[in-house]
Length: 120
Image (cartoon, rainbow, N blue to C red; front, side, top):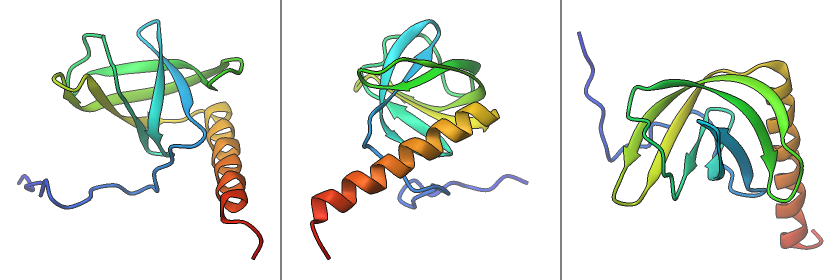
């Protein structure tokens, strides 16, 4: 039995973040993931050939302007939007390094948001 997916309902299980912008290597090319979480990410300006359902490995994650870090992440393309050059990816398996990096980036995001809000 298959379940229909309601395109108007948010299917996300993890809160999305945009700051800091993370960078990932996909098929040997470096991209900025403008919207990311522990569950996956969105790339704009994607120029590769991956299609929905494609499985691939992410070998590096970093942040803009900083060094890339070696990781071993299994991922699947959830959807693409060729007109907007978007690629949406779901993480299938995060290794410990990737989890720690994303956790650290999320902690930095919380610090940045707190600074923007000012004193309580």
